[in-house]
Length: 94
Image (tube, rainbow, N blue to C red):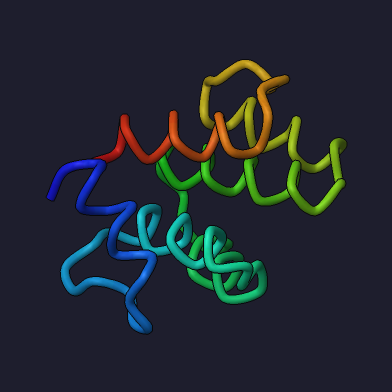
């Protein structure tokens, strides 16, 4: 799957099969299902998951928590728009 196919999958009612948890969480976040996205990612410990977790908390408006997760992901705190950051994360994780 490439980024265009991933973005196109947002028109479908179900998350595409075989996506890893970070990409599943981003998919749900793009579908305005923050709770499902957070459920998928909250117990994961890898850097990619931490990056998505940081993004989710930034979207939520919890910048203190977001900064913690950016640090865990070894990423700078983002100042991009949510759309720009979402696409950046998805593009790198695909």
